[in-house]
Image (cartoon, rainbow, N blue to C red; front, side):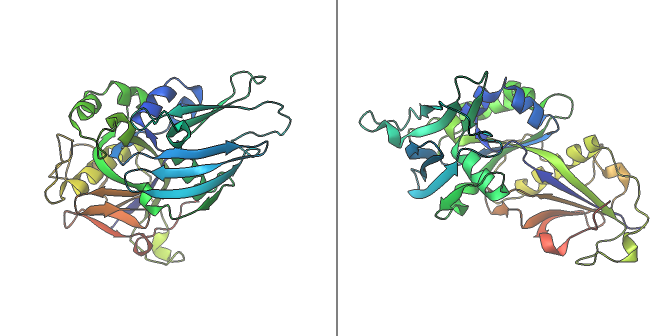
Amino acid sequence: MRKTIQVEFKNPLGIFNLDDFSYLYNDKELKRIAEDSSLYFILQRPCLIFRNIKCSTKFLTGEISQPLTGINIKFQLPLYQKDVIETENISNIELHLCYNKSLKNKENLNDFIDVIIIKIPKEKNFTKLITPDTILRSHYNKNWKVNIEGETKKLLEFDVKYIGHSVKQFIAKRIKNHSNIQRILTTSLPIQKGMQISKELCICLLEINDILEAKTIIPNDYGSENNSNLLKLPNEESIYYDAEKAYINFFSKSKNNLLENKDLYASYPKGTNGLFDEKYENIIYNIQDEITLKYGDKELNNKNVIYVNRKLKTVEKNNYAQHRVKKIA
């Protein structure tokens, strides 16, 4: 019997650079949102900043800029909506602007804003941290009503540095104390000269969003009888172990580049844990978020899947539309 499993991952938190992540580490909301995440990517990208920020009684407006590339887009964020400020009965809103010290110009501080923190003094412990990536992610996921003018695709491109899992402990604790992360911080060079490396290195946490299973791959055929009699799904721990290996194996095959991972799992899909013992012939992974992951000549986005063929022992990129498995009710 041929068995196929497809696992879809999502980023529940958004992407944060290491500076912002350290600020959020003890935040109760982070622990709630990220508690089910057990796969993570360390990424690098030229930093994004806010410019020309203005706040009225109803809107936060400004620009998102990537100084190295000169890319600049405009945005307008209505403040009173779900997950931003959920009631209009607020008499006083404070904006706390955090500046990028690597770019800061004393003559024009408003051009170099890293993070916007919204505070409401009368509301106990109300703090909303907004970064350029918060705006971009909320726009694409349609979590917020936010108007954007300009091309954003290049702003969502990241270079892959390291891929890891955290199955046995809370993922933020794993990342904060991980020796490999400290090594990357001390050995990596910034893309933009003079920039703090912690402003360019980013965290992308991933959790399982959906697991689909069938006997065979049925492209564009949701009604086939071959999708019946679904078998018992493996535990999520095995999936995270396997997904880490699959992504590392795929990116490590890039020409003229070496991942920061010490173990590149060259023998994958053979292995001692993960989904090897589940006897799946086809394993498919994809990330639903609007991001592009690059490493040398390898590139992935949400239009692609990692397609693992156990019989042929191959790990390849394929088109998402060609590998769809019927959703389990």
